[in-house]
Length: 544
Image (cartoon, rainbow, N blue to C red):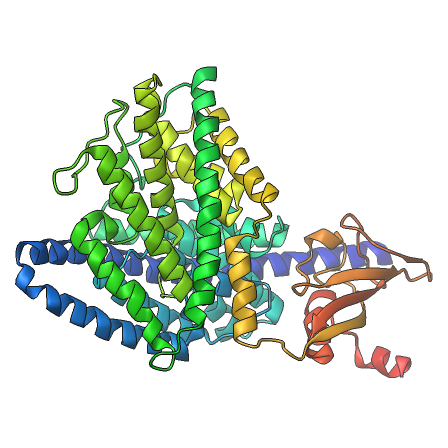
């Protein structure tokens, strides 16, 4: 009769863990939903205000010197801000990914308030800044807040950071599945049941919160891009998609290398204690904003303007009376330069939507060219969106996110093959040309610049899986281990030793040897205890 009792006890323990996880993730989703929703509302107002301001300045050029004076002052202030709070450097996505993997530790309230204020200031000043990256970081901070305030262990905090990040991105795009997939694909690089469960609950809670707030304020809760209409594509259409994807992916590779080069060049600028380098992207943003309002903000309005509603005719405000194709080329070049400057310098603003805008612009240019070559104009909308996803995939290396994003952001859920072709070409081009995911590379550079774990070395730690612990009964691949570590050996209770793989099921009594680069073996062991359970004092004394 003893076995059923143990089994029931284990079932109750698992049920308690699931209930706690559900409640925590729900709190994270509600918190992230409120903060990120208001952040995005303010971001939208910032873009509108900036567009009106720049339009007014074009009509009254005598005040333009005041614009650049204000931008210069803003650059120094923001640069100083970033110097003291490095967690907000750039879009914040690499840092929050590092936090979700246990590589970076931060104070959630400092990072949340700083990113909220600094990125909004950039938007109000007219920089081509997106709200999606900061939204993801703010959501991650909300998850960290839940874990910290409720005194949960490091493993739970990491789960909540990932869940909050998913919720933040989902709210920013009004795309729940995209938010969830991005967290699984980017934050942990693992489709763990735990991460999936936490992210699902948080995203659902956040989206309901977002829609409730926006409805109460009389704001729209619909799709982000609703001007695009997809049509069925035959083999000729797919051929045009393949050619466009090849061209766009090569330009994406060029963007990647330009960003890396810009980072090296900006690192050499020491003017005004290093904050002087922020003058370059801020003053450039002023010039670009005076040329066209499409250079202001993340790029939602630009992408929306490219949709033809199925007619195939792009109708948008042109620059200085030029043709549509010339306007598109100018806007794409400006967007390209802005992404390089902002990301290279580390301006606290998102490049998620700016990259999508650049990709969509490239798709529009190619659509005009292909239509002149004989392509059916009905393919225009679909080709633009496919190029957008291809460009993003090439640089970020998140193909599943890109595919889901295409359909979720447009509300068009038919004819998947052309999207698969475009995204696959973008991904394979990145593989062939050996591109690291841009956020991964930025995370590595951030850790190096901030001297994180400079005294770390490879350590091996032995721990025993305790009954009813988080690891008991789980496959090795489904456990969220410390970042960069590996289970190198398992010793069963009967003394059998073997090298595990991802499908190995851990059981109570197993002794695992975990190898990881760490600056503190004791901290690593405490972290592992959160996963496998801490042995009783009697067991510890017996070993001694």
